[in-house]
Length: 119
Image (cartoon, rainbow, N blue to C red; front, side, top):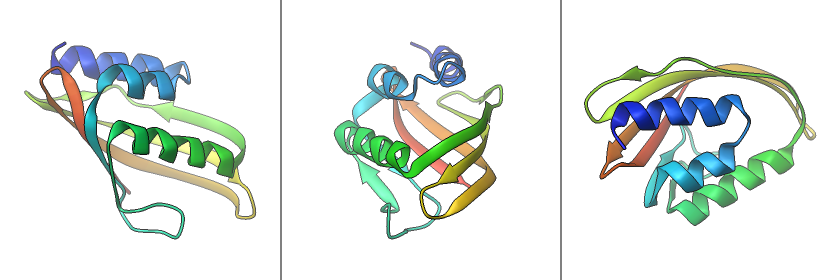
């Protein structure tokens, strides 16, 4: 798949709420996920698809209610793309969280090899 095809497919799957499917289909087995900051719940850098899947599962377990989720159309370059994600959720023991992130993806060999989230 080309970078554009991957970007459009990621948006399609995210719009459908199929985040785990997107990871399994579009990400390299040795992909890296980078958060803006280290936290008690999540490392700043997560390596490998199994660890990224576990991170997603942990996030889902922390969410008690999803109020809204929006993802923008991708902005595509030769081997990378970016989109914005707006999420409004209620977290267990933490209350409601409403924020927007810039999500940057790098592609190599027809797969996503890294994702980075910036606030």
